[in-house]
Image (tube, rainbow, N blue to C red; front, side, top):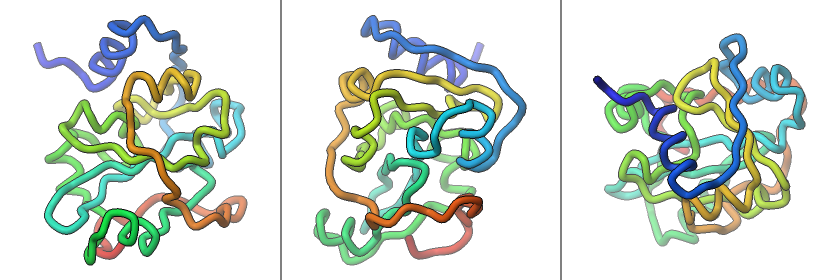
Length: 174
């Protein structure tokens, strides 16, 4: 039987004996909806973005109340090109749709970059392979499990309240 992405996340965390909690809820498709149904601040959401930098796909994990700073990322990585993966590429790489991707690029063979601002949260929250499953865990435990490359990846400005943060996966530039 095919192992679900949630099962893979659970196996990864349990194998490292890291505590986490799981919540089942109505389907959510934006970070704002997820924060509301979880009853947590938007900034605790670990938003996983799949992008293509030069010729490689990578995962960026940023606080849900922030936007990826593509100019900063290109400078840090030494890339001239950076774009969001389109919906078909995300599906091919992860088997998932945008909004349900957990912040573990390692599960999909992707290098994971994490914005340092996410670490300002004691606890982070994310969808775990499904729009109806959320995981909550300590940021330090997430870091131990994934070992992402950490840097300044966001624009510094928080998103306005109520802004729909669904990434248009068909648009090119990040």
